[in-house]
Length: 209
Length: 82
Image 1 (cartoon, each protein chain N blue to C red):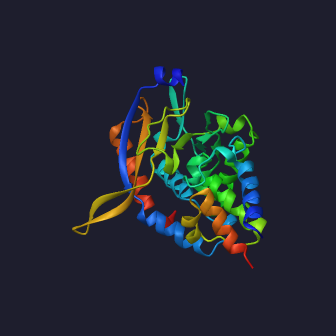
Image 2: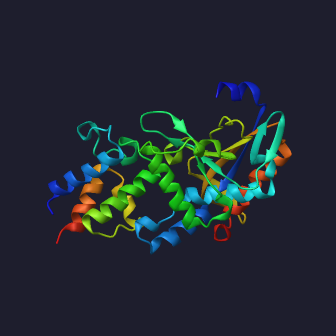
Image 3: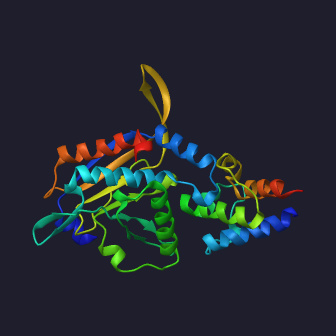
């Protein structure tokens, strides 16, 4: 962690995202499903990040020996809190190429295994980007520290209702703040902004995730 | 099932998820997720476990009544009352 801050020139961006469409999609899907088949909004967030990584590969890969190598696949490190204290980020593999239901099963399995102390060392090394969230009991925005040799970490803040303008009217909309901490040796603010905007756009159309 | 039995059963499931939390020390009217320090995955695991244990359906529309420990026990008691 200290090494990451010392050696990686981090830059930071944030972007507010309207998640009404994402929330409505999850409610609709879950209405007729037993609890073991329900989705959490988190899988939409992971899938949206994964699809953005395909278009902007400079956020998905490893920087080693002064060189960045983009990864073909997206293995998202999920920051999971350990009840005894601490945070670890094992990888969910190939998140760009699985459907939401499969991703949900994998995510629940990973979180449950972490909580039970059952995970493999390779699950850490494999991650090509990390996603972090403090959940709805967290804060508005969080900026992570990049886990080397990765080059980016995406943060999802707590959901909050904010007053915003939709079709010339002021309305309350559920909103999250998305953040990016990225390695300036590999990407820059312009690309970072496009990356975050794409995640946001994907979340406006969750059916297509 | 009596309310006491429901409470004991729910406490058991919560102990699986949050083993270090002492039920005697929590605020039964406080926010459940805050009192037990659980996240959305834990909450979903709790819903799954309670659904199986009590043989009841717990749709998402019921979640608003399950926001506190007392609310959760009351809700499940009502649902399991013959």
